[in-house]
Length: 98
Picture 1 (cartoon, one colour):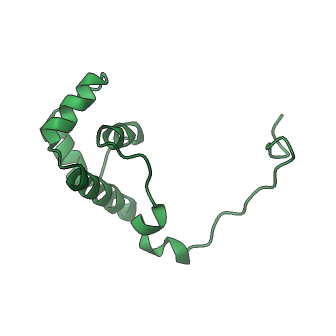
Picture 2 (tube, rainbow, N blue to C red):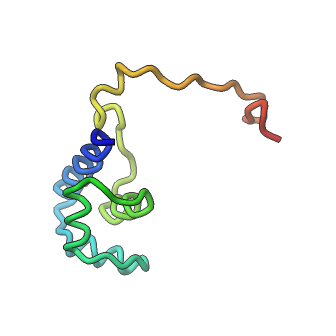
């Protein structure tokens, strides 16, 4: 889990710098989307790397992030074994789906 928190911290730090926005601006953008988070609360969550997945995605959306190259975000990902891929039929469904 610690590694994942570091990833969240890194992504928010990099994307916030890339967008050139403050936590106040992110807070206002979230408020326009109906999400109430103070800038100090966002700053604390980002510095700990701990936030709900929905909030993390909303922050990325507020920053204008449209994609993340996960291989570059988690450097040792290339060394990890991937989960086995399940085969799909012609309709794009796995055999256990109806």
